Image (cartoon, rainbow, N blue to C red; front, side):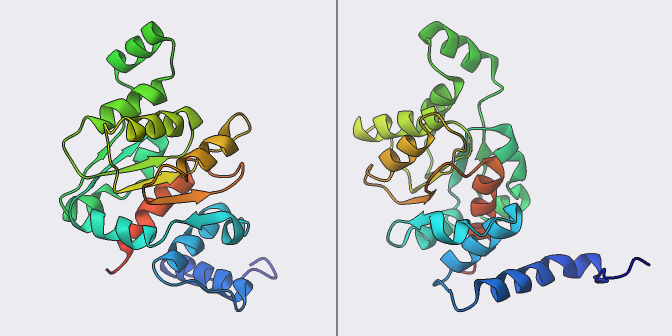
Length: 209
């Protein structure tokens, strides 16, 4: 056995990881379910910056928990985010997860309109006759189109998870969605990703509300 390695049973790895994260956060704490979301984002990324950059509008995390427990649908901008969501848990509440990125008609429409598929996907999601949570982990254009749809009164999401990652219009799109007048959870700055968007969804699904 290699020296210095801690022997941890597979079923205990996540528990031990959360203990390490809590220890390293020191005296920093949040109310629940925000604290669980922060810890799970750090666990997913091994990046403690999420303790500083995750922004929650007032009560947003509990709004998300309660919406999911009512059977809200989650709309993602990537198949990766969709894949990462615990759909078994989601279905226990009567919810579903949707991603339209791979639909041929979405690609065709985006090409005809000279816009991104992510923007068209948000329109498809907005047309669902459901209570909605949008989980965006890749495309700032998805957040921009969501902002427009909200201003046009075509959709009123229960919550927006605005976590695109990258360099072009990412920061600006996040800041824009924080002014849209709907509950949000946003990691400010350039960081985020589909894994983070899915992690936030799962943290709310696992919460006891």
